Length: 165
Image (cartoon, rainbow, N blue to C red; front, side, top):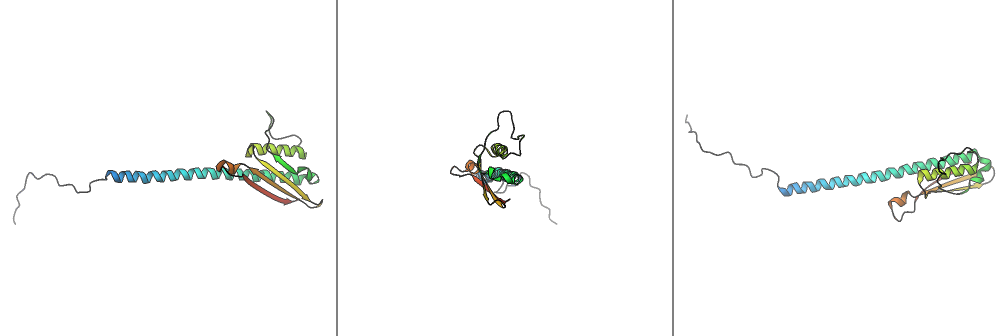
């Protein structure tokens, strides 16, 4: 067996040509990460907007059915509920509830107060009571400024419910 002599003075092994990331690669990866985070922020903003809109629609639905229930409870005075109801703020220091809740005028005032509190100052409701004495139809249309918050040319969001008494 041949023996090899031990060589001294040999330096460390040479490094390979690709030892790390270049500055261009780091900048490109930061750009991709930044675009991804920007997309995530836009997604979160859209989610928040749509959640607020869904909440407003739910509120409008509940208000319309509450008014419809009041009209059903007062069928003999159903025609007194007709007309446009505009959102109105309650008197200072008072809430929306009234003591004479059976009266159609008081119920309309309470409904106008709830429209103001839950859907904003520009909310309106249009109540149409039609039909003969035995079978009346009621249509409640609620319009509020949900669409106007997000689009300048928006006409507002509308919810319509129809029922026979």
